[in-house]
Length: 337
Image (cartoon, rainbow, N blue to C red; front, side, top):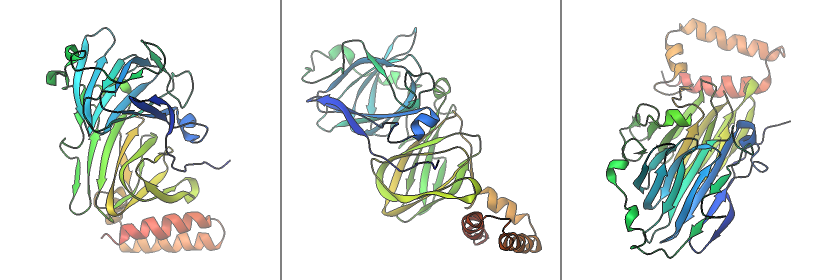
């Protein structure tokens, strides 16, 4: 049975005047169930209030748009009331109670990606509301919520703004990367997930790479559009398609993925199913492919290429592997010398 990695858009589950809740369904995106991953999105209009709830899953929340206030109660700890804005990543361990409020004219949009290995339904979040079903309401006055003012001191240790954090990668005319891990947000260790925000310039390429610690990568396109290719076992290309803002897709363990941005650029936010992700890139300035090839003699490289062709001609090397890996990935690495 072939894997269906086709990017999908979220579907509305419920909502009203105050906002709506959207989710990705594992029946339409089977890798959610396969990887025990849940994905959802909360949209709040002005004065929209998402009432207190807890979930059957640990999550990372990412603010896609707008600003507002989040209330977070960790097990056996006092409530934290955070000011949140676009670019904030918030770690939500198992058992946490949260509520969300938008006081601005712009919609507040929050993405949730998380681990459903302990959930009632694999691939889906189940929320339990403390105030009744589908707790999204509107029309709350400022006076009513004055006791829930955001406190800046509560922000530290609970969230990290990925658009303002120190860069882990900064390639001139290429792109920028911020990685969320236990060093800059220790609470993700309790969640068991890492994350990153990648911002590609127009026509830039994120070189082919994979997670070398057997982690899944769940990617949401935040802005822009582009193309993605995923190569699986035996060099078989399992996905080649266009991607745009709002799409979500999953890269299985050890599969190689590469993305190219359209002229206007492309940003994405990903979670990785380990709190301290490690990636290996097969091409590029810091790639393992480049590092290894530079230490090999030219004679050895020629020999390897001749051997690959010989095996392919004898039928001992699958054509797909030769085409996708040797002709594209290796050749791209050699051009970087």
